[in-house]
Length: 123
Image (tube, rainbow, N blue to C red; front, top):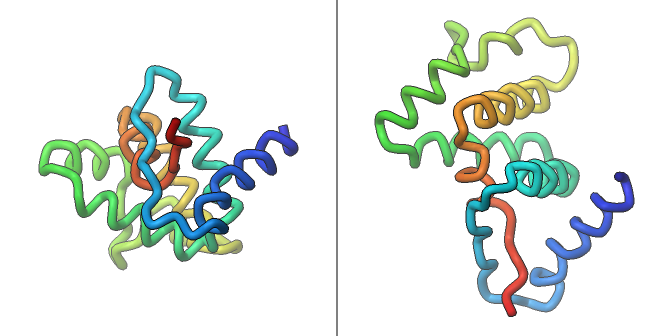
């Protein structure tokens, strides 16, 4: 499994290494497992704060109904952070990333988020 993530990370980095002007977003597919694998790779190549910013940006881009659905699955604390991460002893950004990704999976929005962060190869 670790080798799969390394391979995916290398594939994700290729367009960047060769100066691709723009990454082509992934097309949401029927296989949520592919989206999850890609996101795990993204987690390893992005700093926790950068991934959290992308998650926040994705949330902000959602329509009202989808945003409400996500917010219901992702309760907030009084300080605006994610409630389940308020008392974390580890990286708060990492905790919030995990909570966001779980909520995206539960709400069915994970493939939508994956399209914003996971490039695909073009033929």
